[in-house]
Length: 125
Image (cartoon, rainbow, N blue to C red; front, side, top):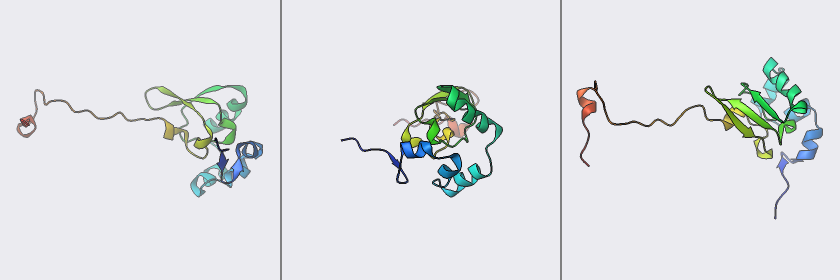
């Protein structure tokens, strides 16, 4: 049995009817403060594009996911490429950058030419 989504006691339909300032009151303090201090130019452009486009490309990893974004696809830049993120209800109140990895896993190989004496040692076991 699927349960209806609630964010701080409000359903998604109630959240979509709220203004940005009203939604900000439900957020944790740092995110509430950043919305109250006005959005950056990139973030304002994203808010305008939400109504017009289904797929939005952005570099603004610090954009907070708001109810109007739910169901949209964002291509978020991670420093090398754009990674597509489908926004779901559970992502409300998080930053877009939290859903794209910007660091690769470090994989070390065997020591090569020019390695120091201590790093040339490879155990037998």
